[in-house]
Length: 592
Image (cartoon, rainbow, N blue to C red; front, side, top):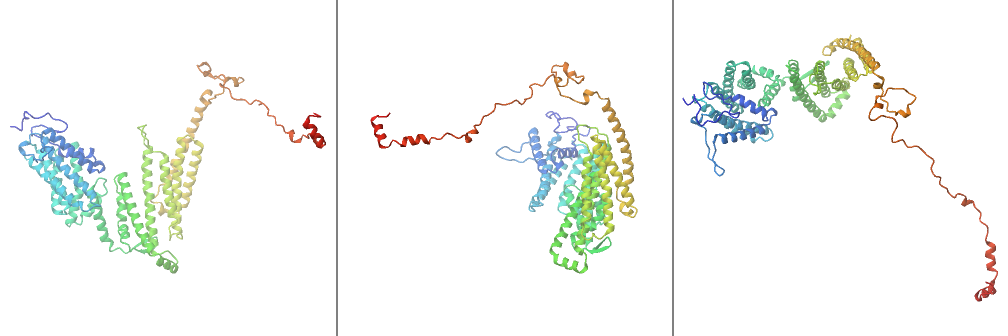
């Protein structure tokens, strides 16, 4: 048969066609090719435009290699891949790239449709185009030349694209059927191969599971919302287009439940909640905190903390705007009751949630950094965590605690103020501990020892004040463990200081002090100086330093102002005595 032996004019297998010729005929790793291309050309960062450009360039290369031209430079003549042409798996790859190009363009338009709703029409056209190319791929794979694995992968890929189209059209039942078909095929393929080969199929199943549960919820399965909440905990669950729909669904569900919520109680005071955004946030607060506790890794926990803080900031902003519009009424209530208004107290409660969430987030980050600090450093060129990083985290914690103590409505709550002061002492002790660690790294033993003593002082103060506030310490670090760690560090510090002094004492004198004094100036001091026998002995200083010498004096005629010259009056008078006679004598030359 033609499928059992290669054709005469068939080119040799290359990296471009990824062909596996076996007993079943033509083979194409559809999912593997798609995932590799997406990860290497933009989708790792959500850049669909870059991936679309890559698909276009690869299509051009494939058509040129196969001689499958679509007309010439003057006229376009469309061609379609037929079953008779499928003697090379690159024809199948050609259809896969066309489907991927249309799908990536649709995802790019999906991002742009948030600000330009008209692009949604173009989005649907490109998704339908991708599904059409998927159906063409499935028909081509029905050829007897194609092996069974490629046929199944083509069916799963087509079902996925069809499900995406129906999902965007909100045809929940049809979308769910398509996604279930895709999931079933990939699960069967995963069970038929080794674990290493099945990883890719399992990842695809995890990607479409949130879509299936979302469709089930919209069909009428109310229990699906719980599964969606659990999927939200995973870092990769519900990515891309599904993430927005999942968040919108959770918000919509909470909004329905918030209609029955009218008040909240905090520190013995009940406050009515009339702002819808505040109701939705407070209703989902317990679920968010539970999700953080159940987070599988630090990355997921950090993402959930950031989401909670963003929601809290938006809620505080909504309450703050309501406060501005209700200033006069709030002032009247304060004058009558002598305490802050309900709206202001609600604002303080939300601010407390935000600040305490910041404290817990930074404490979680500090625990992760502490674990990395204790790990041995394998790569010397890579910068690892340092105690200074932890100091910055504890600075932010202490700043948040300082803001907590100034919340309006809690100035007279002495129990709350004591709890905040106690928490401040605990985190001061940890901050002081890591400052001491940073001094140990630069071998400043005395400073580090003083700081360790300060840590012990804080810890003992916490233990003495915590007898009446045991409930407030359940979520805080254990001070006893810190004391034990400080005592161990003190002993190791003292040993390191002693060893450091011995090393200094054993060091040669010429290595301890580097003296640059020339030999001519230290003739009375004996010292071994190997440099005197080298090529550049330090004998005298050259050029020599400048020395002061007496300069040539300048003379100023200061006595001229005090000199009395002789009078010339007698000479002037003699000239005046001649009169007319003298004048005549002068003319004729007499008497000269």
